[in-house]
Image (cartoon, rainbow, N blue to C red; front, side):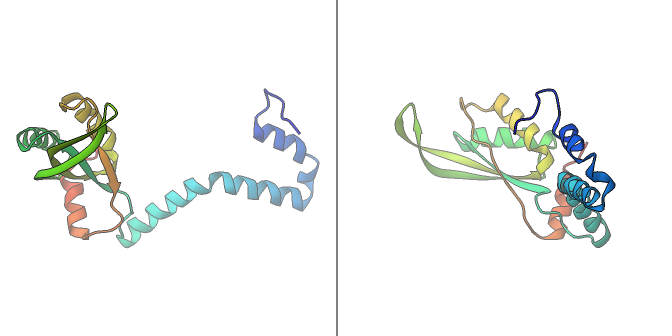
Length: 165
């Protein structure tokens, strides 16, 4: 069975259920379909309400971001600018790591510095765009991982240090 091109799924469904809506089964079926369509939004609201009432942490609210840099000096400049722009609460600089990766169809070996950034997940897009503008690499590494759990006081400190705006 194919749907007419100009008819949305809900219009099509309503046409099919018009006769059935008078019966209890049709109404039940429509309520179940609508509940399934809005479930993700309801779940999100329920999680936020639970968090507000109990003070519990919402998984994924914060993230750890990894950015590789050609050296420690470049890493320090980028880290300081990230901090000044309030895109992170903390940046750890691991000054010396060995990297091996494919570039121009060849295996490349180099030493780099690694930035480990703690921030709000809502800032990842802005942070990524900023890194793409200032980073010396043609394709800078920006990889974020959501924080599932952690020290509540530390997570609150991140929230205070990185404004939502």
